[in-house]
Image: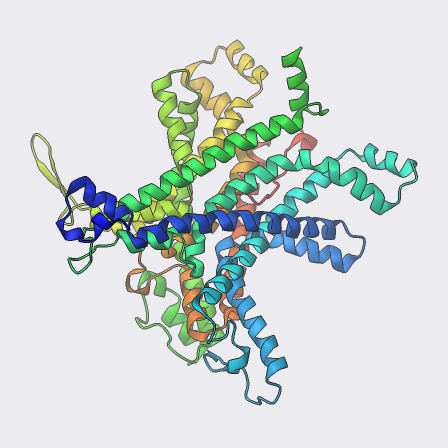
Length: 293
Length: 279
């Protein structure tokens, strides 16, 4: 990166370390922290949308929709989430390729599953084998985001369903007394009020989401865990910067990163809770009023 | 090969008894169910021992956290923050790398009379190393639950204990501890369920599966990778875990009933299973 780093073998001490930490691979390592943040930023709203849909489905009067919602929220209770992380991306991938195979190559007669193989015609491959590497990366990342959104959507559906039930019944009755329709009462009265009740659960969920991000590594995305293992491993003298096994230091760095992230989140969410409880007819709001008086 | 033969060969494969080679082709449903079920032995082993050990450490840490003395309270707070604030996945990696760095020959402890050489090699094996991490992790999560319960003990109960002349150990043993368990039990049940779920991470995080002795998810992934078909192996392991979760809920429900047996029937808290923790 710097001109003085051109010949690493001649460097010593701190200068060596400075050059080592700014090498090209380390830049990719630092960029992968951005991948983690991007995953958090993209997954959180999508999971919230999934959760909202799940919660609404659970409240539905139509029993097939209701059972669909209930099944969705129940599935995360009994089954470890990591199974979903392994299952969803590959299942999605095969489902998409199968659909494309059926539409793009209708005259292909052989079965898709042959023994231990899953074979689709070349035009149906996702992504196409001719596409550039960044398409493959983006595709893998997108599948990972969907897997996270499905699992965390189910968690969020649980939280939001509870929050909707926590809104006092009298509020809805008042809305009905004013002649609002069901959907009006839902969108204008219930949804704006449910967030205070949902916040403790949602902030808990955010912490869990942060702590689930290293699982990206299992989905084949080049995330911080991947780079920590890659860079920390023993480098013999054929490498520009030889060093012994340093993985423990890299993982210590990751540990500190995650501890910092959860600590900051805790503080922000604490402030947000205080802000939202302000003037509310809840225990926390009452405590604030007393403290001020 | 009949299914009975498969069960004989592979039912205890995960602990190294039976056929050495895993099936390589023409996977039958019976093979998948047997081998994945065999892997569940490890999930139960990790979950059960970590829970058992973690329970006692958690009680101690929760009490320390409640202490007015800063030198006692601070380490407990740090311990809880360290293990609850970071992903279990990273903790596994870090522990494994740390155990690998320990000298291979063992550490020589020079006591005054004798020299003891402590073997350290087994720490890099999953059965010991991962168990230690899971034990500390669940201790931290449970300690937070117990701490909350300790703070929620009704003052009247403590005053009644004082009025009966109970103090120190007797008061703790007969009033504080049972009440703490009673209040913490629903949350602790959730913790137990998710600890069992967390055991699936062991063989995906640094700790190698020695001689292909792995847990249920390890074998499920083996089959899914070999057959390129996720729609058989993963539902099987999911079904096993639903079963395990139901057993945990049943056992903890019985304990919950015993803890609350002195209360009037309406006042007994029901166990509510809420999704909570991915570490």
